[in-house]
Image (cartoon, rainbow, N blue to C red):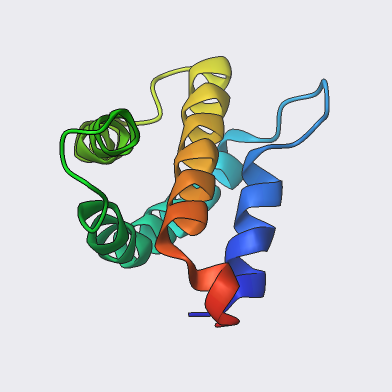
Length: 108
């Protein structure tokens, strides 16, 4: 996995701009994000499952992890605003997975 590619996808998904990108660009970015999420989810799950079960930290992280399959099966919606919102949400999910998977700490 190329960490720089993952970081670039996160930056693209979480822009600080007022104008929305074209719908086609959001479709392409969604596919990129979903690919990274699919790779990182098992790594993050492995690390989260090593936490003490029943603790608040474990419940919070596990709840977020368990919500990911529902988020990724959602489409972009029919409008530009809904598509941008969904891509932004996937960007935050990918950021969560990067942080919890430990890939940045391993230098991969």
